[in-house]
Figure 1 (cartoon, helix red, strand yellow):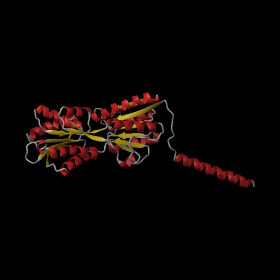
Figure 2: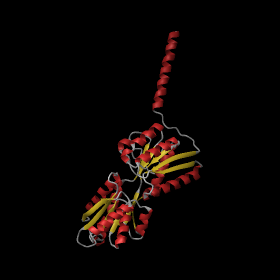
Figure 3: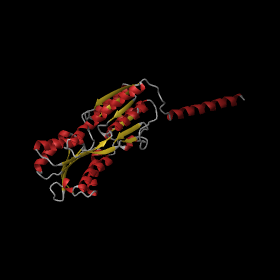
Figure 4: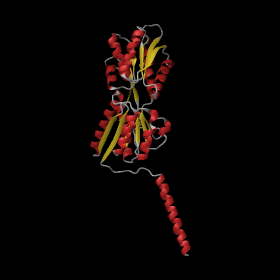
Length: 339
């Protein structure tokens, strides 16, 4: 009898240990009541106009949240200045400082695995934004999220600006009336997925929409105004009087092209961009930029902030639209033209 009792106790102990181990392996983040939250934010480049707009919105969201909840938000925003090594070091620093959550705008979307490794080891959730890590990396952990813009949607909307204008008034697009719209293309980084998709689908939309286009030339300006300005200045010299349309992967490069046009005293060339940045919208209102595709930057930043704050406290994520695959948020977009 004594041996049987001993055996039962032993069996129960083994079962309890197994349950404990299993529960440990499937442990979920529990809600934590905190008086303050530390959010580490690393930017691929702080001088990017669109990213700058998003950061301003993030800061506004943090202030509003503090007023509403009384919970202090410590936003630690760092600029990686285009260096993945610098960004890796920033992530290490955020972890050492005890950040509750990380918000990362990757320098190199294909090199996110190192940052993910560090975050997973420290059990700190990550919200990536603007530059989407590869799917294999995003699938590694259920505490990884992404907030961005659907690049194909951006491009289709951008192309439709010209398609609609051409259908309404062909002469407004085919400026010399020869039956062909000659265009130049300003592209972002060669390795950036948004640049590749925007290029492909903006052109495809024009073709599908019946606009008789012909490419004169194109170049990579890495999203930068100054680089685009230099390219446009060169093209104006090489192809005088032939450019009718400038298609730009973003507003900053379109503004660079406008700078070159103004220096050369050239007018009556249509330019279209993407992002709806503050300077871009000003150029639209002044008639220098025909149109752009604008993300709802308040909702974009709001999604980053809402996910970050929820994960920092172990709460369920709630956004204004359901997350795709439980981790992807796509910001709404709209065409913007002069009213």
